[in-house]
Amino acid sequence: MNLLLLDDADFVAADRVILRDRRLTHLLEVHRAESGDRLRVGRLGGQMGEGRLLRLEANEAELQVSFDQAPPAKLPLTLLLALPRPKMLRRVLQTVAAMGVPRLVLLNSYRVEKSFWQTPFLEPEAVREQLILGLEQARDTVLPEVIIEKRFKPFVEDRLPALAAGSLGLIGHPGPWPECPRALSEPVTLAIGPEGGWIPYEVDKLREAGLNPVQLGERILRVETAVTALLARLF
Amino acid sequence: MNLLLLDDADFVAADRVILRDRRLTHLLEVHRAESGDRLRVGRLGGQMGEGRLLRLEANEAELQVSFDQAPPAKLPLTLLLALPRPKMLRRVLQTVAAMGVPRLVLLNSYRVEKSFWQTPFLEPEAVREQLILGLEQARDTVLPEVIIEKRFKPFVEDRLPALAAGSLGLIGHPGPWPECPRALSEPVTLAIGPEGGWIPYEVDKLREAGLNPVQLGERILRVETAVTALLARLF
Image (tube, rainbow over all chains, first blue to last red; front, side):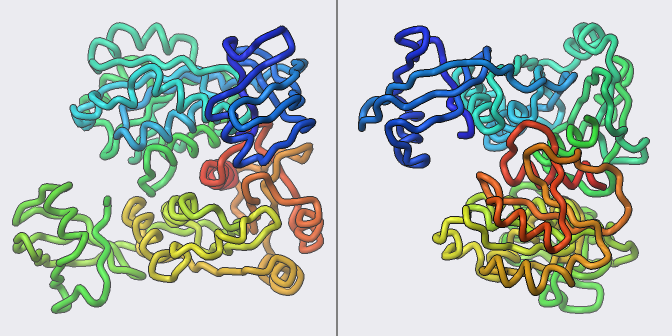
């Protein structure tokens, strides 16, 4: 937790917050904070600044806070991701938030096991929890938008062309494709497949929607690693 | 497991292997393989090729194998990493092997908790297990060399200058440093700090050994994400 992220419900006055949850535990057990300590704080969806610990007790912490700094810029990116397996999903959500992705579409694919859609980790509260961990890690305050699309074809045919309009459309896909471009500043729509990759039909449909395959080399990367590697290469 | 990695002990003839361990379970339960199936295989430290399943039984699989393909090239890199916490260490070892790092130095730092050095995940067999998972994921056959250095100062003063000689020395470090360079083809020695970063004394010592700080932006990344992002940016 490199940023203490505050929600509206934490505020007891314009410049005062009280914490009682996991963040209190973290202050006590990991930061081993003490009264008077100064900490980086951020207001969810808003600015970042500094907090001073007025009181730190076993069941409650009180901080005086002020905000004067904009959160870091997001990437100019819409990321389409075939729904990963539940354990990977949680880490990917953290990574996506930490790397500064503003919009994530979790999409079905032939190689996504049907059971993955049943995971409690897809509940809005569970998704939000992982995104917040990513924001706290990277020092950002703005939650990414997460869109869940359980049907590949209608999404790719009907919604994707508008979503990708005006952006460079790319599919991260192993194979004999051009190398993934580097150091872009234009908007990008990037699709990353499931373990085992998109099937040819899916690649064709994504291409019809204006996305073109690019590759990172011969090595097959786990989804989480591929997301990080592609974003670090592109921007 | 995108590559079935074979060890000398698996061979019962020059072109035959028998499997009884976790790889057998994986063939049965994840691949749901059947007799006659063809699979990608690799010989640990050697070439890659194809295997044909001759027999697949509950306690034993037999394959006929042939090898005709070199493993993918490694990166021209020595990676110095402050020892991560045990859970992160396991994933980082997989990532390092998957990304093609040929040499990893696990190093002490002021911010590495002493208890991290006690983890059973640092035992040679445990390290090898994670590296092999990374090779199987990425389709590579060559284990990275892993060097364990429990003392920062003697390593950085006495061994690092020779290890880094002839390479571009970099420290991935948040702050007002030059941007991390891109698309290098020259050899690199890259140092990545612990959670919380190298302390100023450590940065000074690394600089004396010829390494210079570079940054990836304002966002603070987890070690595993930072490793992937820096490697994807550099090469």
